[in-house]
Length: 164
Image (cartoon, rainbow, N blue to C red):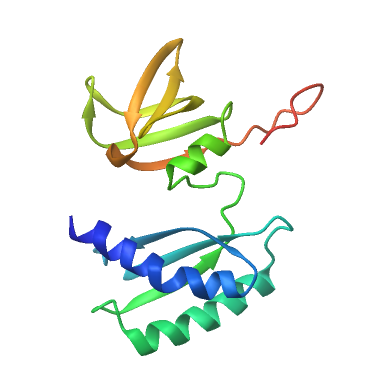
């Protein structure tokens, strides 16, 4: 799994840069060049105070400098830095644990019980599994089988509907 090793290496390279700026590296995505678009390295940053465009610009400049020196990606790519947003992607087991009770979309790397896509409520984390409740059925999804997961924002307003 070359991409996972590359992402882990990129995280080791980028995380100290982001942390030195008082921010959290939320996650990294790398999309190789496709038929229509070139390769993209997407970096998500977060902070208890929120993320603004200035934070993204500062991180982009610093990470660009490190990437120019280290040159870990052999192909041309576009660097994007942003906040995770309301539909924040979830990369780590700790992310799923922190968002217990929230609705998420999960896409698995391979079929599980005949399907790859799940939308449900995070019940919690057990060992290396995300516990997801979908239509009153509980699934234990190993974190290493999840290709992509993200929060489904709740835009309902009113009593007890303030969660996103």
